[in-house]
Length: 79
Image (cartoon, rainbow, N blue to C red; front, side, top):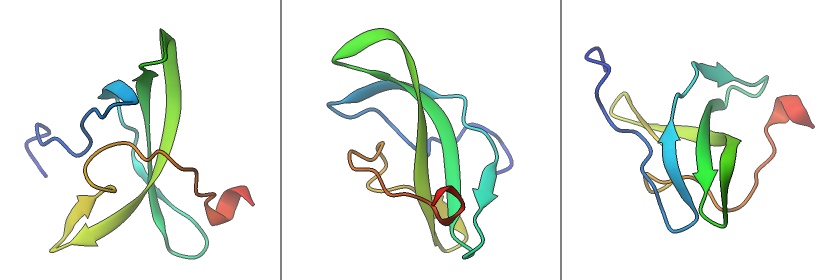
């Protein structure tokens, strides 16, 4: 994770142009989340802000199946 060149989230059929992730934030329940932007394939005129839950495997962050989520899940700090 130190070389800043690892891919955590890649495109899928609904979102492309994944990038510029911010730092990882933790809600009051201890769940980690990552914010980043993506371009919606159905509306490519601009970027949308994405927020996805992070799970950890052997100390490495994992987001969904490696692509942006398609369903919303509200973090504790937004309820």
